[in-house]
Picture (cartoon, helix red, strand yellow):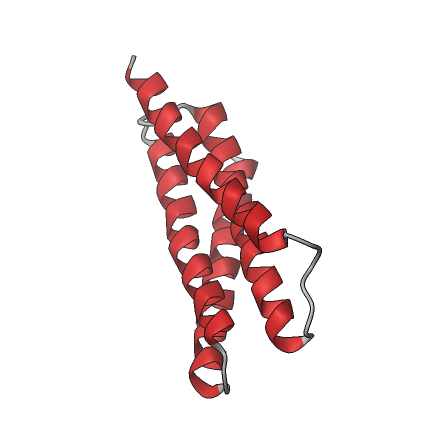
Length: 121
């Protein structure tokens, strides 16, 4: 299915970017923002893959799960992108981009939980 393949590709890119940011934070001076961005990308890349696997197994409601997985990808990208830009360019994506991304990730986690409960009924 095309959305699943897209999510798997996005998760792979997030994982690669997370590893690159981890390396940059290890070798850069005062790069704590990059470590946070790396952790956000690596953790949520795994969460996206898990969500796709749960949908494929029928343990998660498909439509709701897809919305949540895309929300995880968008939220993590906003959060990590904002922190990375702040580190390298001295400014963020837009005001409150990291909190917006964090809030999107939180809401997506709640949606995944709801999707699991809806599927069980």
